[in-house]
Amino acid sequence: MAATVQQILQNKGNASYSVAPDTTVLQALHLMAERNVSAVLVMDGERLSGIFTERDYARKVVLKGLASKDTKVGDLMTPNVLTVSPSHTIDDCMCIITNNHIRHLPVVDHGKVVGIISIGDAVKSVMEQQEATINHLAGYIAGDLST
Image (cartoon, rainbow, N blue to C red; front, side, top):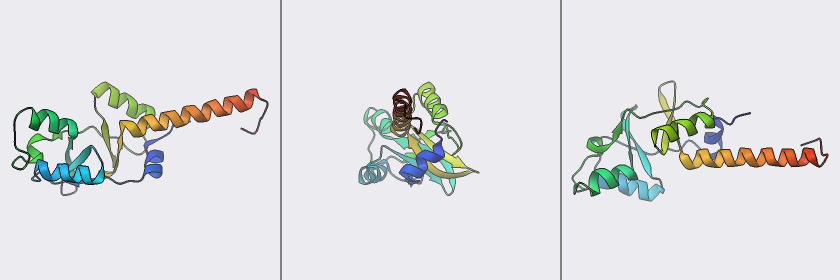
């Protein structure tokens, strides 16, 4: 059975970090460094406005010579963020991530952000699934019908 986003969130937790659109890039980077994450959600109250990532910083601040302390996240964030629901499968997420060249998917349930998964979370889940399948098949081949 395919793993779901909900299962990943149950294992890793629902923690996601967010900033307001008027937060400076420097403040967002401090939060990202403090929490050891490579993306923050940009929230306008309870509404998901966008996402700001290390990639956004490198391409939209550093390469353009902007000042992190003077530039607002809302001016540089990626708007119209692709999201998934807790019931999406990890295979669905891998397709979305791969086809859109992104690394993070906010998880939205009934209009509310309930977490975020990264490409690393998805790959880890796929690897765990494959390992379980291999162990099951090895047990079956060895004659252990309880696996």
